[in-house]
Length: 106
Image 1 (cartoon, rainbow, N blue to C red):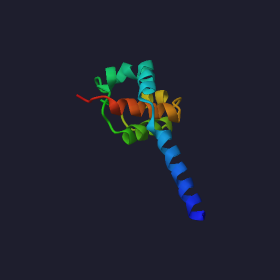
Image 2 (cartoon, rainbow, N blue to C red):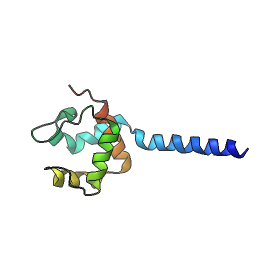
Image 3 (tube, rainbow, N blue to C red):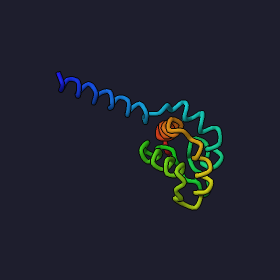
Image 4 (spheres, helix red, strand yellow):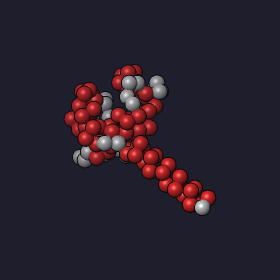
């Protein structure tokens, strides 16, 4: 019985962890349209010194957005990214990552 309980508890943790980071691409697209497109271009295709984000893996996008939100300077546009990432919630970051990773990069 104890091992059944542990297995069930582990399954619940796995399901909850996956849903917290899976994101909603439609919500991410809507959030991207608020201001991200100004620098990163339509559908994350990149512009000038702002990198292309389309098609990047979800973990990569989440890692970068969380780093900026924490105030970590990563590159020449860090101040702008920190300012824009600071107010993002975990769900918004997951949604943005889901959207951008789903966009074809070419």
